[in-house]
Image 1: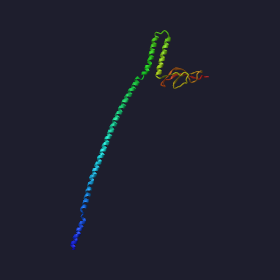
Image 2: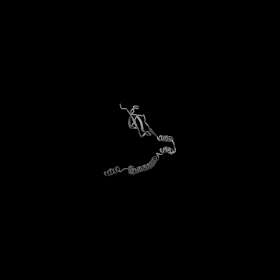
Image 3: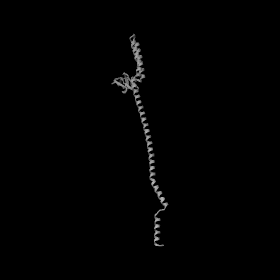
Image 4: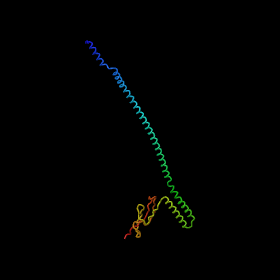
Length: 210
């Protein structure tokens, strides 16, 4: 073999070594296409995730708006109910103040009737006994009216002096009475539902001086 032929063969071998075959080129091209398609796929997936997130946010917003509307309507109903209750209570209080004495007045009307009858009878009566009977009947009517109104009489003769319910007008020596007790009642006292209306004005016994 000549030297020129040897050089040609070496050159061909070198070219074949540097040039890839068709299968390698195809693999390279396929990998290149796969690499180029990855960004598009990732973008599509990211866009889909964003769409799902926006839909979820929109649904959550609508749900929150619905609940807010329901709460607002509930608040308006509650305010209306409270306002109606306030007006009703004010009306009831007004009626109580206006007609609170209705029962008391109705209980005392028979007393007035009795006094008027007694006054009319006194013009025709010839004796005081009939007048006394009329006054006694009127007093009984009055006591009955006070009892129905839960008024209790305080007539503490012989009881221990109690400054919560009695008012001492004076003290008096009384050998027969225990010191500190009520000798006599100048003016009776009264309670209304166990609350003091007027204290009993009394004279209190004291120890006689030697």
